[in-house]
Image 1 (cartoon, helix red, strand yellow):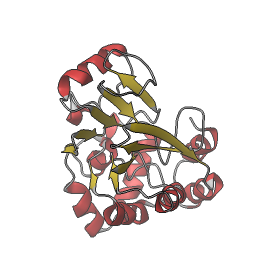
Image 2 (cartoon, rainbow, N blue to C red; image 1 turned 30 degrees about the vertical axis):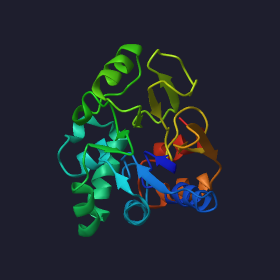
Image 3 (cartoon, rainbow, N blue to C red; image 1 turned 120 degrees about the horizontal axis):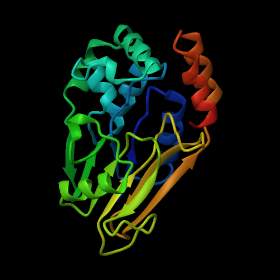
Length: 233
């Protein structure tokens, strides 16, 4: 089975449609979303609608939690707070109901899917240090746990090896961000797992960054969010 794993779309419709167009021509069986469908970007309803239609399962991200009032807005940076307040006024009741139904963790096909750390999924911990990586491995029993949240892609083995995907090991895989990469590369980022061949690929695609950046400014969202897309930070 070929699975696509997306995360951190952040209401970036141009990026999401580019990813889905790629997947439509690459024989993917199922699509999983690791949350943060909304936040930062200018197209929350359009992105939520595509996720509902196209994704097999989706977990909740911290921006959904903030939008629903489950996570205080003071836990977000200033642009993030402004974007969530803007999103509150835009999101439809239908999409808000869907986002409120999302679980924190999903386990399917012997794989774990969670937005942030599997050890404390409701606290939205960033997995950035080796200690946090080790804690994460203690928290899941499947062979792979897919995460997002940092917007920075990486593959870490249980032996703490980096980017060495292989048979017989357990892995924590951050698939990066579809809608707001932060590794210095503005190309959209997501993962492809082939469970039969046991292979994993990180996919980077160009999309119309300027379309989203211009829409951010046009809709009155913080201009820094447009600059971040162009810079990939």
